[in-house]
Length: 197
Image (cartoon, rainbow, N blue to C red; front, top):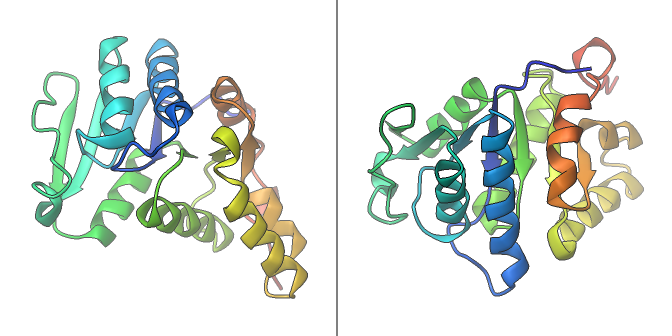
């Protein structure tokens, strides 16, 4: 069992989306992380689901690290107010942002979001497959939001582009209340990741 989850990177939308359940899930997860004493690592914005997540974490007494590329500071309305045990790190590029979030986090969670959220999630799963890390990844299926991504992975398996073992690279939470338990109890894959040869 993993007992070393001190910081979790959450990938989620810079927009709120149209379903109230999505914002509610971001607020619930931020509150749960704070109550569990787990630092939130996220994309550094103060709007959309990102803002709701960070604000909820802070409101519940948690610590937050935002990581944002310099060129997105205005576009994603950077959370410049993070201070004290919380902080905003400004990096040079999207690639550096993803690398830094990976370095800071002991696990990863996907909440609803757009192309950026999908990109970050697929990349972190791929990095686990390539043995670049062996940290748990949880897809939080809020109102079926993870279903399209899961269907895409299943299509890749069915068409012979991925092995069925890739399903072991991530876990699926059907509700926010399951996320922290899945992170803490996720078993590392044998040898660090999935062997594809």
